[in-house]
Image 1 (spheres, rainbow, N blue to C red):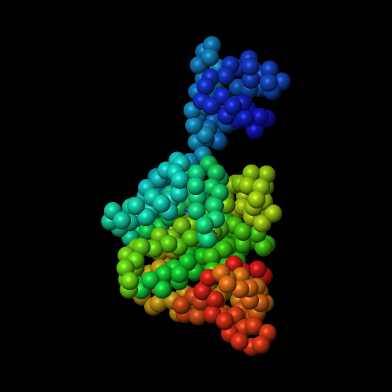
Image 2: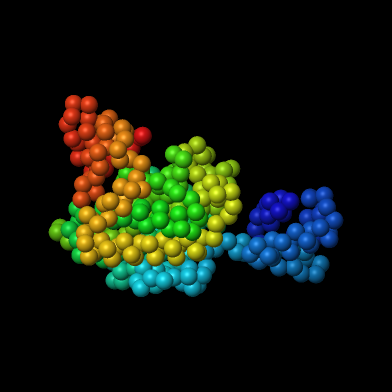
Length: 321
Ligand code: BTN
């Protein structure tokens, strides 16, 4: 009933619909309609009622309220500065602009919906309104550009830990940047940077998490290979809390990284990874290599030993396990 009622409001796009029309379409009494509307209001929907006009949906109330994230935040700099959008093209694009304009380290861009989310290798990333976490963290590490990909691995550890803590689900990392549950993709991480020849100016870490999508809400092209926290857990997840927990985990690991380098992060990453100690295919730009993944280097490069015993250094690839 709730879904049917929401569909009627969506069809009328913010216009009033009379109580009579709703009760005709849903085949129930005006009192029953009133009760359903009251329930929708309790779950965050803003619905206006006016005599002789009926009801209209003012807002879905499914946004991530920035003050809720802030009220749960325990960090010193990650997430202290936030730019929030109900809808935007891509948080990566906004974060790049902010970084160029001098945004400080730890400034984050969060969106309730992305209309042109970016994935790796030029792919699209779907983030429908109210269902996912889409955010980009601006960093200003004093690093040579070739080390920036290490931050992808660090981010994956932070996200896995935060999900375990807040949702109670243990997911696993597939090198370099996917987080999976039962073999299905839950999180994507996209690391981009602005750099001079030998120094990074800023690194933008994009994190996309499928949170509250139901199976039938997944885009058809990814339905078989992707999942969400709500599907796995069987209940909805409060996004603000999870975001705050990710910032917390991220800041701790990032501080450790800045102090001790990637060698301190590597064992933590390996402890959460499925793509180490196993046979896999690595599809690079030029070839497909099958081999045993023996680990990653201190630079975050995957080491793959093929059937002839040759060790390949994989810098970038799609992995099939
Ligand atoms: C991947 O291909 O797996 C990486 C997906 C990264 C998606 C996130 S969502 C927040 C940020 N904004 C974007 O446009 N992309 C990243």
